[in-house]
Length: 105
Image: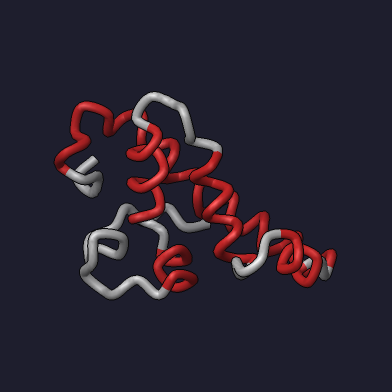
C-alpha cells in the first residue's frame, strides 16, 4: 500500500489489517458509549485519561510485547483521523500525516 510509512514496506501487508481495524473498532466503541452511557465510568476507571484517549491507549497496550509492537501500535494510529482529533496531533506531524490510508467505516 502506498500510504503505509516507507520504513515499514516489508511489513505493509501485515499492517493493512491493523490500519483497517482502527476505524471499525472506534465506530463500535463510540456506539457502545452512546448506547450504554458508560463514559463517566470509563473516565473514573483510569484517570486522567479521557475515555476516547483510553480507547487508543488500550489499543496500543494490546501490542505490548508483540514483535514490532511499537510499529503495530503507531502505524495504524497515524492513519486514524479520530486519533489525531482526540489527541490534538498537529497536522503534518508524525502521528497526523497529510497522506493517510483512509479505511473509514
